[in-house]
Length: 144
Length: 144
DNA sequence: GCAAGATGTAATAATAAAAGTTACAACAAA
DNA sequence: TTTGTTGTAACTTTTATTATTACATCTTGC
Image (tube, rainbow over the protein chains, first blue to last red):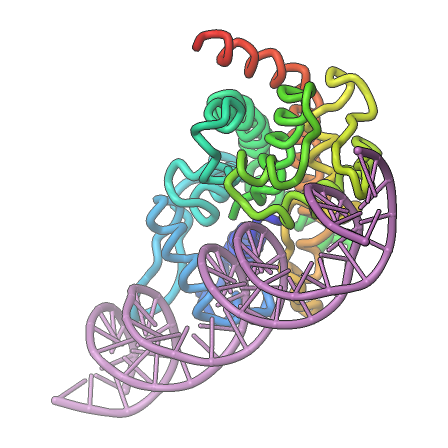
């Protein structure tokens, strides 16, 4: 199973907003760059807005990033688009038999360990920022 | 999105096999403990067998774990049941527009970073073993 | 005022993956 | 040869993602 592509689409969107900052960025433009439907882009825009990462100009169009790119981490983006609040990475089977000594206790035993794994992933995500992406995209564009 | 419950079911199965090592362990028994269907258990058994972690006695029933529990990590189990070989944790949107400078390069920029995140998660998974689970389950059972 | 071009969002469909179920052939041992 | 089990195919159900259509709402310029 995989983490949904909303995350990579969101980062792609930030890259568009920044790279083409001289022009008004619309959901149609970003959808064309990503290769998806404008409504998908608008939904992700709403999630990013709800997380306080961007502002969207209604009516006229255009997106503003609310803080410097080096202060937006991959984890910020991940949490904004990927999961419901406090959702856990691992999906637990929900009906272990409480009358079996293993079924009764497996949840206690695994929960904290799986959370530890999730924290490790999140820690790594928080080390990366949109500024890194901006920098590297610029290098690639330079080359051409 | 979440990692499927096959992973936690598989660990639950190992816990059953070990905790009740005095009796023959069948898919029916494990399914009852997990709260699922025996066929689900048998499919996971096949995946664990293919990964070389267990042997299953056909006809008669019963499962043997092929090496000491402290030498089977969560990562071994995860890789056995969770993903196709070399499957990546993050799902990339597949059709970025090659005529857009961002769409053309986003994959290059993100791939190595997302792989780094995945490696961090896998590293943490490899620190935990089934022996840890065995030990803690035993403590819980002791208490009663 | 109102036309043009956006966003916001509901409703729904299409797709894909996980999880569950039924059925039965193949097998091992008493 | 009976019993209880695994192996596995076929199918259904469930859930989540992704895509699409449609349209109300908003902002600006004319």
